[in-house]
Image 1 (tube, rainbow, N blue to C red):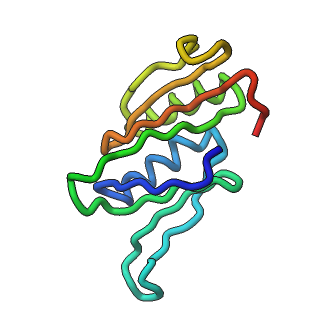
Image 2 (tube, rainbow, N blue to C red):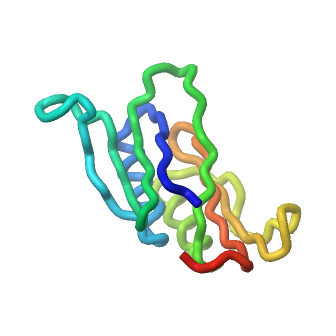
Image 3 (tube, rainbow, N blue to C red):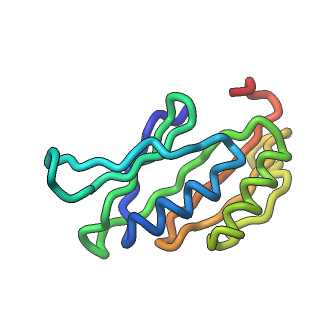
Length: 132
């Protein structure tokens, strides 16, 4: 289960807007923009949430920082399809069209996309998993 993850990106504002649109079909929404330095200092963390789970974006400090691969649960194959379509419409890149992934397990249905920095996202519905 996803609780929270930090992702380093080259342009947090752009990536924040992208993820808000791409993950909207799964119920994700803006949590807030915060400064770890306290009031009056520059925003350095952008957060989105779905229930108790959160994703935080931070400005990449160096090109040497690796991206991430993040699996996000969907309640149905329709949600997988809708999220994949929303991600591509928001400017993401195809990294695997929606469909069964029997190489992982029977009833495993997923789609993959990447953001502007090459971070990889897998939206997955597992037929045996409880709805979230």
